[in-house]
Image (cartoon, rainbow, N blue to C red; front, side, top):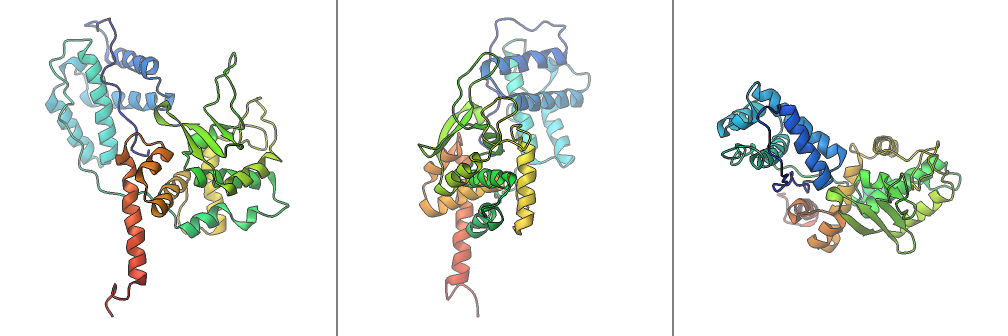
Length: 332
């Protein structure tokens, strides 16, 4: 995650009340069904909420949801912390549980939300990993992929990696990009993302089903054009921009593996995954522009708090330059 996702809505309401004999799995299923229909959350997000509720049920044992007290949640939170679960993971679970009990309070006799006021352990301050400008450029524009006799897979890789760095996309957004916008047809949904070469931009649907436009740089556009010249037609008849040799839409996992293998091949000094290029995009753009709001919009962050972490990266860069360049920075 980038830190810009929100917990379940507090205001999910249904007219029917919870029956006294409904089991915990039945209540969880009802709650998740409402999240799916009213919030239209992704299957991945719904599955995460489901796992969090299942874990809470296991930790509570035979206790009914309606009987859970504030002290029970505090005890469970302490237990998770003692098991060395990360502060981020515990905070996410508390958010999931809080949303569920908000919903339950509107459907059953619940005096108060037992999760309210329970906080996760303090998170250690960690910064996202970003490549230097030289390393990022070397990674996405390696000469190994630029020669005239490049294989289609190499041209596909270069187009994917250039677009990741050029536009700061999440890997799931990259995998969902089509060659053009496709309207919804019977049995198929409309495009969630597509490339517009004439406008030099990519349109993607990010977290919370929020759509945004991001500019595409000239090097990425050239790499995409080279890939389109050899791109095989998708086997499923879709408009997927990035496809494998067999014509299947490129999956998130395959993109991750290809980028990691390429980074090792060209000698990138750190472990590289797609989000490293997103972090690098944000850090380098902020270093050059200083415009935090613009970077927030380009990344698709709902809150500027999620973007402010890159100001720390920017300061690290400036501090390194100072240490290397200022004649009085280091003791003689």
